[in-house]
Structures are given as C-alpha cells and as structure tokens.
Length: 60
Image 1 (cartoon, rainbow, N blue to C red):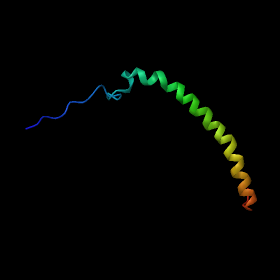
Image 2: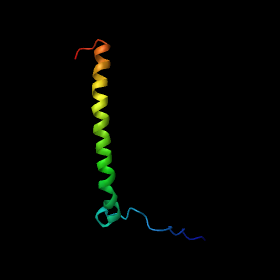
Image 3: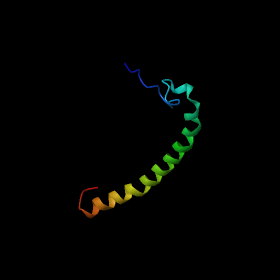
Image 4: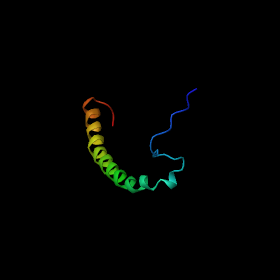
C-alpha cells in the first residue's frame, strides 16, 4: 500500500486568519488602491450610464 503524499511547504491559510500576519501586512495596501480605483470608475461610469439612458429616451 502507498501512503498519502505529504504537503509541500506551508499553506497561506492555516484555518485562523488572525494568526496569519503576512496577510494583514499587504491587505491595507491593495485594499486602499482598490477603493481608489473603484471610486474613479464609479465617477466615470455613472454619468456615462445616465447619458446613454437619456439618449435612449428613458425617463430620468
């Protein structure tokens, strides 16, 4: 009989998010960048969508 293969390395998820500090080191960096890009996209996309609906003759 063969035995089960052993896992390679340490998984990034160990079942407890609070003990994985490396995740929190980079979390705020990409979260802040994602929020800025989301607000930028919303500031552009909402007026464009309203303009297209006005051109299509939909009530505003």
